[in-house]
Each structure stands twice: as C-alpha cells, then as structure tokens.
Image 1 (cartoon, rainbow, N blue to C red):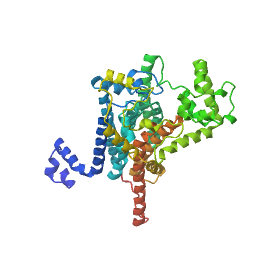
Image 2: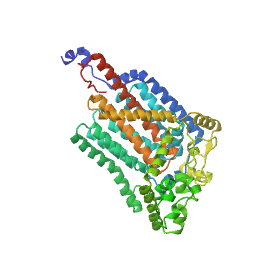
Image 3: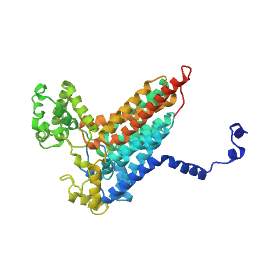
Image 4: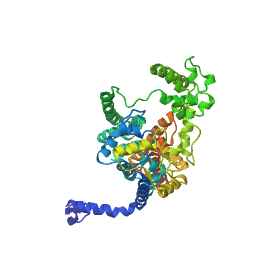
Length: 502
C-alpha cells in the first residue's frame, strides 16, 4: 500500500536492494563522470612514469632525519606511516603509497564537490592540478612529509563536509584529522582557525555553533597533545618540534630597515649588510654568510637566542608594514605565470625533475643515498634517462598549474565565501557558500603562515588541492545566485524564495 501511495508498483517496492543491484546502479552512473575518469587515468599514467624514471625514490635535504629519527624544525609525525610501510616494504613502496595518496586526494575532492552541488565538469577541472601538476608528482616521489600533509587536510575537510548537515560527529572526526596535520608540519596548527570559522557559518544558530566549535577545538587538540606527550617521554620536551627564534629571523632581517631601527648595541650586528640581505629569508637563516652564524658560534645558545628574539621583536614592532609587505610580495608570487627562482629564494630546481639522479650535496650525497637504500631497500639509485627527460620537458614546458588560474580560483573562492553573509539565501546555497569558505580560508591560512617564514615552491603545494576546489565551489555559488536572479525576474515579485538544498 505504501508503494502504491508513492506511485510505484507493489512488486518493485517488495524487491529487496541487494549489494549486486547497488553496484550495478553505481556502474551505470560511471559514464556521467567520464571527464574525471579521463583525468584520473592521465594522473595514473604520469605516476607510473615517475616510478619507473627514478628508482627507488628521490631524497631531499631533510629525508635523512625522517629515516633516522633526527630532530628538526618540523614535527616527525611522518615517521609513523614511513616506518609502517618500511616494516613490510622498501623505499619504492613508500613512494608508491604516496602516489596512491595523490590519486585518492583527487577522488575525495571530486566526491565532496559533487555532493555539495558542484557540476561534474567543474569538479573534474578542480582536481586536474593535483593529478597533473609535475611539482606534485615530484613531491610524491620524494621521501618527505608534504603529500601526507596534503592528504590529511583533504581528509579533514571531507569529514566536515561529507554530510549535508554538520553534525557533532563530523566536527569531532574533522577536528582529529586536521589536528593530526600539525604532527606532520607545524604550520598545521593554524588549521583550527578555518575549521572554527566554517562551524560558525554552517552550524545554524549560536548555541549549535558554540557547542560544535568546542567539539572541533577539543578534537583538534587530541592528536597534538598525544604527540607532545610522546615527545616528552622520549626527549624530555613537551613540544611538537624544536622551532627556535631563528625560524623568524630570516623574514625579519630581510624586511628590516637597519638605518631607522632602534636596537641595543649587542643586537646591532644582527642587521644584515646589503649583500647579506640578498641572501633572502632562507639564506639569512641557513647560510654561513648570514650574520646569525657568528652569534651562535661565539655566544652561549640561550644568550644568542635572547638577542635574536630581541632583534625579531624590534623589527616586527617598529617596522610592521615592511614585514607585511615582504609577506604579501611572496604570497603574490604564487600567481606568477611561470615558476622561477628570485635572488635569495630556495632554488626551484630542488622541486623539478632532472635528467640525472639528483643529489643535493653536501646534505644528501650519493654515498649517503646508497646508505639509505642499503638499510631500507629498494635497489641501487637509478634513473631512466629517456623517461626522466620526458618528465623534465613536461614540467618545464607547461606541466604545472598556471598562476593566473590559481588567481582566478582565489577570486572566485573569496567571492563565493562572501555569500555566506547573505541572510536571504536558501539552505542549499548557504551550505554551498560555507563549504567554499572552508576551502578558501584553509588555503589562505596554510599559505600565508608558510609565507610568513619564507617563500618556497614546496610550501605552495597545498594550493593545488585547496584553491581549485575553492574556485569551483565559488563559481557554483555565483551560478546559483545568477539563476535565482534570473528566475526571480521571470517569475515576478510573487515568486517564493528558493530554499532547496544542493
């Protein structure tokens, strides 16, 4: 009888839904996602080529500390999946898993965008950068934590956005996953801010917003506190990582106008000369020519750190506009047409495929690389020159996401996010705008905090997974607003407000 009232035949209503019938229905829907399937296939082919070109993996300056448990400026949460994979596999298995993570991120982003009401073709375009960008491919082939950092961000945002209505369970799951980002890269600590902003925008009512914001914050703190507790038990320090005052010195020294800066006599030698300022924030922090090095060579560490901290504070409080201008200038470089190295930058060549097996001496010599491989397995370092040449040509000749496209996505994301302030919108458009706000705010937080320390093309990689998705959601919001205006004009003043969901 119920089936008849709903307009369906009794025999169809009585027929149970089997697992086989559900699979069949899903398979019938696959042709609707042909563009995403083509891009996924292209991404898979590129990743196979990378695996064949550089064996067993690529190594960077910091790879050794994750393999050998050395200390550094970032947390060591990457060691957990790294050691887990190495227990059952070798270094080639590690990068194979990281390539699978790249594909999984694209699938997750596409599913979230489509569930939130984005057109399938637009969602497919949004996942093209993470699938096809050669800089992303190169990082997936490298023993470094960046891909896991990206994957955790995507997983955390997907947990918050998966259900049409934000629940407390989604807040807890999203908070725990996003909090785990901070155990991989310390810049992940900032991710609690966009998460809370999203909860306030999407919760519906102040009581719900407060309760769910508290749930997100508590859940976010759980993995960080767990990591710090383990760190205290092992090292005696309750911290995520040993990030001293030198991490901000490069940015402050590069921005300082020493002629107008009031410093103590002991702090004045920290002011860089014009030739030293040309080293840029990274060089001022790490180069032997930096004025920072003599301080730590001649003074006790605690006393040197106190003086460097005083210098940083003086620059920030007396010349904040110069510091902000330096950060803004570096942030704008993401939108350049080409990817190039400016004086004082970390060389972009570190993130580019080479026609030979790369080793960045003296930090990772070929002898050290052979030592890694001898211990963890994967075969002797080797490169397929034909494949490596093809990959290098692909990367240098346009196989990366153009800066103007990222700028367009940023503008669309910001515009779509602003729609969350509209009180006359239906529930569907408001939730879509809140999702756009989450992606846009997350991208802004991660990228700007990274740029606050120094600019590196490596630190711009999260833009590939966040900004295109933000742009797709923003364009979807604008499209719905345009259709509403057109529909309202056609229907006249008596038209009812649209409250349909996505």
